[in-house]
Image 1 (cartoon, helix red, strand yellow):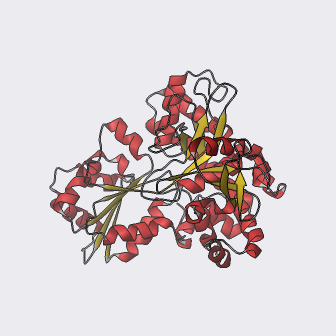
Image 2 (cartoon, helix red, strand yellow):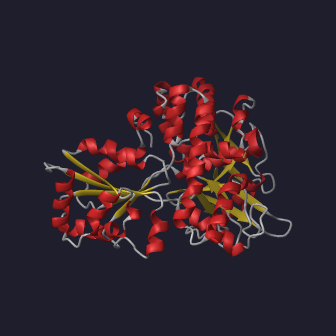
Image 3 (cartoon, helix red, strand yellow):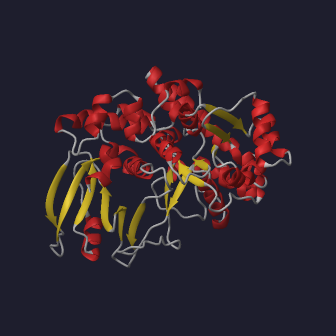
Amino acid sequence: MSENALTLGFNRKIDAELKKWKASANRKPLVLRGARQVGKTTAVKRFAANFETFIYLNMDVAGDKSLFENDLGIKELFQMICFEKNISPKGETLLFIDEIQNCPNAVALMRYFFEEMPELFVISAGSLLEIMMDMHKISFPVGRVEYRYMFPLCFEEFLDAMGENQALEYYRQTPPPAFAHKKLSELFRLYTFVGGMPEALSRYKTTGDFLEVAAVYENLFLSFKDDVTKYAKNTGETNIIRHVIETSPAETGKRITFEKFGNSGYKSKEIGNALRTLERAMILYLRYPVTDYSLPFIPDLKLKPRLQFLDSGLLNHALGITGFYFKEDSLSSIYKGILAEQIVAQELLSQTCMRLEKPLFWVREKKQSNAELDFLIVKNTDLVPLEVKSGKTGTLRSLHSYIENSGANLAVRLYDGEYSVEHASTPMQKKPYTLLNLPLYLAGRVLDFL
């Protein structure tokens, strides 16, 4: 994270979650998960303002890492840390261990902070955490830590970061006033192209120049490929993972086959391992479909998954389609509508910091009777089908198929039009249902409207 982005100090949803964690009587050491450069370090440093004492350790720094290589009890270790950092702790103290995946000893000691120094507030973070833990055969002690997740900025955070206070106020209304629709749509399109990576947004806010944003994403994309050497076991695996990183943007939004992925000659097992590695790094997500009509949903791992990328801005850069921002008004017309589905999935994924909940989608695969629903929303015990449609019109064949077979009486369409509610019926069985039409920019507020 650049100093410029840190200075801007974007408000993030994780801010409120960290404060709740601090106030909890059952607080445990916290592990903050997220991909490289989504803002984890910046968020914790902002949060540190709530403490009288803040101690920062970075396990990428040899001197900080060496502190955990001594065979010391946890209290003596903490005294040594304070001594080396020339800090005399006063009042509430936050210890932040950054890039903890680079120090297996620090991971192992997390439980002892919980058991022997419960008064100390401890947070750790890492972008390649799960991968490095697998390599070193280490794990966080069960029941001794808790987790929070960070993703790229969502649209609500983007509006706040851009200083669009009026737009943010209207965005939060249910529904937003009709006169705000045009500007919110324009801002959402801008958000989709700039993306939600903090440094890219910081650069755009400062310069208003897409070329500056492109430079950020080029460096970030290169850093993802450079990271491969940290978690690939050999040269062959390095080449496969790099191939997947380079070709996955073009496969985003599609249901993919592992065998020969990205026009390669690689086998299914090789590609599957590479994709799962990148998923653990939170660079992409494999969303397997469900086929049932009732809870609990169990994704069918025998069917082809749909690929979701980390961030729309990074995706635009990798595909070279940022120029469409100046040519096309509709997100649904860009890259065959896949960009609209990507940003909706991204919005849905970022709505909770408590866990990683990959958005569901539903399929029915029968001879001469296939159907595929873009998303399936779980609201308490209700299941609501959701379709992302091109432009302001479009058929709802898969949605109707789901309604007729599931008994659902409420559905959502995300599209380029304005907010409305209509009473409709399916074309075949004439089954009545309520259709909630939401503009694309309200993807992150679907649950509020339901």
